[in-house]
Length: 289
Image (cartoon, rainbow, N blue to C red; front, top):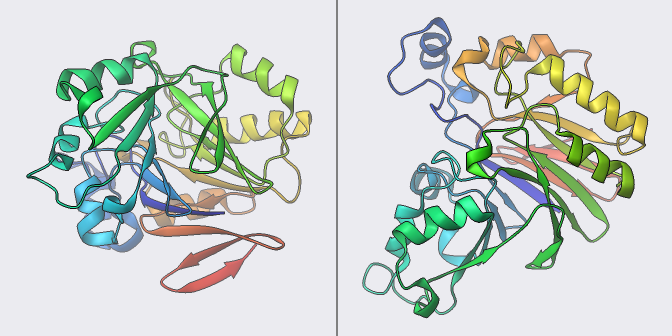
């Protein structure tokens, strides 16, 4: 399994669009891995995770093969994770040679956002929608996917995902604070052995708000997963979904996580499953963990 991060920021991006805080100024000056677009990832070139307003930017600058993708799972209805207006541009006349629909999978709030924009979608061949429910497994493009309830704004009907394919299991845990009781109970029941975990780290080095995690919360959640047997010494753990409000640029976060057993994501980063665990590829180079 191969997971590519196209965007690794929270809703404002890093640097934030209108901001002049110290973190944003440093990010602009330093460039490189400090420049983060809004959150989006792709599994095996087939399963898209979220559809933010920066999707077109990812097509232009990062080579996202959007025209070839047939399945997209959405975490919640907030616009930095689901921007359905751009789906209109997949219709005949705006896009050509569209033979099969792009199926969007989302909870009830995502469906409401979708239907407000995409009228008569049931008779249109460009896009389709499949409503999903927490803790009810479904399949898409060969992946077994289980939505888990997030600790996030309830009005957005938020979930994050446990994804399995070819014996590899990934927990993609964004946007969420420390997991809700219902999710912990479900995980305790099935106790999946996780190969890779992507943790929300919107709060960076801090732990100042609910509905998101920072490094301290990610450590606590990982420890609980370890106690349950879901995470072991072979599990690769990364922090993702960063905000300028976290008070740290990439170099600062690198120092903060040193010795903590976490990697840091950045835009265009690839996590690739190898025969023995996972490796990380960037700029054509692979580093084994």
